Image (cartoon, rainbow, N blue to C red; front, side, top):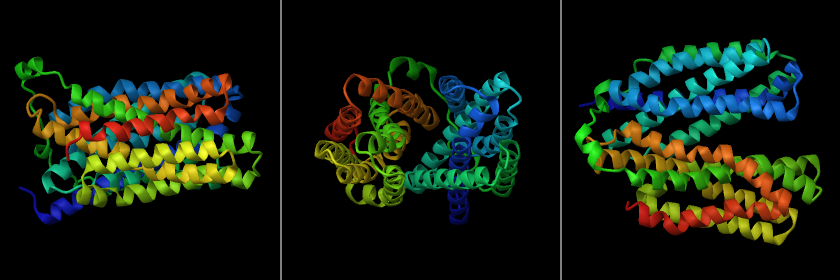
Length: 388
């Protein structure tokens, strides 16, 4: 059905899609302090404002799955990249607070459509090629995010305004999208017609369970990113350099784990990989917290990154396989991915404030036992949910 050259080009295009999506997010995050300063708003109002982007993500994800199922994830990934290049510059305009809210909502929606469709295309590539590639694509997203954040930091230090910076990023995304627009799998690779009668007779609870496991992983990812430096600084009075190390260690191991994840899952199975991953993340984090010293925290964040790296990619991959096997005609791969990611990504929203609330009642060190426990729960339940 597809030539080797066509499959290879589709893999390259999909990897690039993950890179530019991560790059756009890294770019956005790197300029958040500039948003606050330009609009002269408080920390609390900034936090509330950022929820508009989150709202855009969650509102768009289900419609996006239906569009990807109807028209094919390849074409949707192609065109959503071309719209993403508009969403990024809109945020950089910063006319006023109300515009900021609207632009965040638009950016979140467009990013969500692109995210969902590229994950669906990755799932289609796994199905067509009968080979695991999802984890490598997510490694690409992580690398793109790191690159976007690093370049954004340089741009901010050089005095480049968010308006010009985001315009340049938008042009870059458009250029890349145009160069790769004909490389994706054709629409018929994963177009899906849902049997309405079959849909009424079955409830895809397995997707919900996969999503809940992803939720546990996402809470850990969000907590590791947001609270590692705070824990090092406030609890152990670390220097500014050491304060930055937990996130650096975590991010490095996330990329390394995702690069090797497909190979390990192919050799040992996704269920075993998730069992080991959850145990490494959960036990490693718990022991580091119990050690009650900065060296233990650094090792804990290293192991947390190694363990959490493959959880969401493997669960997204499993959702596509489930849709293409058990729920053919009931749930498309795109809708399966949306069901799992929709639940899982909610962890990025609730994780940081949940940890903060518990930390206020106890301490941040003990609050971080929550993601440790959730990772161990993933380890204990993975084999019961995923069979291969």
